[in-house]
Image (cartoon, rainbow, N blue to C red; front, side):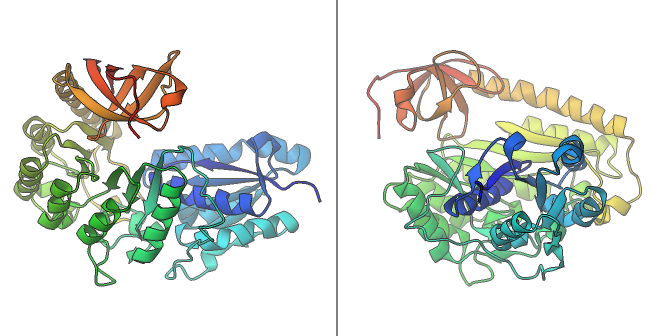
Length: 448
């Protein structure tokens, strides 16, 4: 039998990257060869459906296989992730080469399903018909398998699946299901395997990591401290937190455990209490500010980022100005901003007062211009300071340039040889842009 060849293409969040890496790991352990999509028998597309733009990108991607399919009946396509949960059945009907659709909760079924469509290319599998209330995990022998991943020195670990918060704009609970915590022993075992394989930084993932353990009589602060104490691990991060569940015991761990990085993504989503209530966000702006004050007092050098939506249905000029004032008052290191995007099936999609798209985009541009200035000011104030940086890869542009991240999660570009990859070096910051810092290595010796 000829070699079985596959390709994985990932669109969207870190959780999609994590899921795809686990599938490619199992396929490779079964003798599959990962190749470029032009050579693949099967292409697995793992897509995001949180925003309309991401979904449209995957639709366009699917259409690109028409020519090759008409010519050679290849490749077969497996559509997975959040987008499959939403559009999977329509994709099966529309594209003859889509032979498999599976949602985020079916990851444990994917390797066998992919092999099935390879052996029987005329078959079509719809795993969405499988009971999505049950999460089908993908486990393997950690003593004999190394998880494939893009970065050798950094890795993600999902600690929980789904979400129970039902923010009115968000489709996640509908495509990833209700909240389920992973067993701590599974998380620890996976972390040990990654550390053994050379990983020095682990990011704990979840739609709301702060909710970890509520369904198994544990809590996130406990888990974070346990992971921070794991031998051989140098750094721990976590995303994403929900303000109402970001509690003082988590701050205690951040403040007391050197392994836990002083970085936090705490989505505010809007600066107006009226809009926050319409979004079903269970906090006020004043309560959010109290959380920020607490963590900044306890965690020096904190890198603070957030998520913010403009143009939500009914958002007035006064509401938008409240978000602008929030940026001015809090001074985030970075804001992941977006114009509101309707998602069918969510309550917000049916709300009155939808804003014209050109107004949403205008507000987005105005907000981004303000935040770029704030970010640049923050970064320029770091000139002359020295940071310990994990060298995680070559810089995207420039010869002999490397890149890494500070503990507060700022990207730093500097000169250095490839022998430094995966090492910790002290870097002095010489200049700054809004999106990165530039510096030089102070010491030639590396820190393991």
